[in-house]
Amino acid sequence: MITKLEISGFKSFSNFSVDLAPFVVVAGLNGAGKSNLFDAISLLSDLAKMNIQEAFGKQRGTALELFTQYGQSQTATEMAFAVEMLLDKTIRDSWGEKAELQYTRLRYELIIERRPDRSGIQRLFIKYESLRSIPASTDQWYNTYVGSDNRHWRPVQADNPEFFINTGRLTGGNHETIIILQQRTAGGSSFRHNIEHLESTMLNRANDTQYSHAFATREAMRNWGLLQLDPTELSKPSASLQSLSQMAPDGAGLASTLYRIKQETPLIFNDISVELISLIPDIKGIDVRLDPYENRYVLSLEMDDGRTFSSKVFSEGTLRTLALLTLKHDEKHHGVLCFEEPENGVNPRLIVQLSALLRDMSTIFQQDPKAEFPLRQVLINTHSPVLVGEIKQMEHFDQWGMLLFARQVTQVKKGHKWKHSLITPVSSAEGNLFWEKNMEQGLRSVNREELRHYLETAKF
Image (cartoon, rainbow, N blue to C red; front, side, top):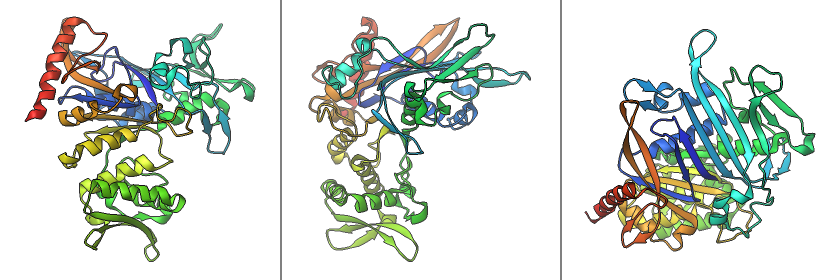
């Protein structure tokens, strides 16, 4: 779960910082930077899976275009990220080794620079990387969303940070060095690497529980995903020997995931069916079976008039709703889910139910403070003031949710005009108006008027 995100030098972000709740709504008009926020999260996730060149290659635009451009002639040479996280207390690696984390509140920092290599060719390199624990005395996020009295999710109350990855110059050394430390119980040894030509994060090297905190951070970041449901993938049967254990971000493997749930926990499969019926009344139920002739899992839908259809003829709205219900109820689903414009393809009359469904897909600590559930976080962005209006009216929203308002502002730097994203938390309510806390009064007034105009478009 991402609890704080800091970005500078990436796309439209400069000295950007925001705390994030377990459930986050980012609202605003086109071009405000909502998608760029998700792109930053996606890039960090990829950097925990692959080297810099591969991770940048998956982004929208060229590598150079990902660096902040100041006017027409200047481009940033560095991009910096900092992420604060809450992690599950227990981690298991691919060899079945299990470890208990001493610290579950960690801060990861990363700086990437572009500069010529030894041949004079511009390349991307790691300039700085660190991973450390967050002292309890400064952990306001935990007190707000989990509760200062709840020791379950933060078992150690240390006041001094402990480093698990660090960058510095060793005594007598000529170059900056990144050090990754093993768990003390594993002997307390470390691995060091010269940072001069490093093209992969040290975090990516932590592949087992010997480096328990770094490994847990890597695994958490790998489970940050952008949900881009594709009706074509959602409707496909799943080949049994190639089936995914969990549904992919584009919806591939929906049938095999539902089949697994049906076999392992029939009551949960029934809950998914019942909830789908409540949202789409013409449906009588769903089923998924193994076709022995084609060796694949086939999803079917029974209508209230007795007709049965395969998933190939499901409507886009039905497929999307079923996918969200599957994620909500699947006990194996965890991590950070970024979802752009969830209202697309949904009947406007179902916005209330959609809002509740999205909320229930995230971890709400107040509901069961000591439950051994997997940590889940949902971040959505939307153009819909109707969806925003429904979500902001939910009971105890401030205890588990956050509304962010995105807009573009113009800044002058070294004689050049450039635009950057301002994404600020919206707090206190007065009728239909919100305003941002901890903000300069003049900027607050501008934002309030823009937000008023945005919300009032719902009346049309």
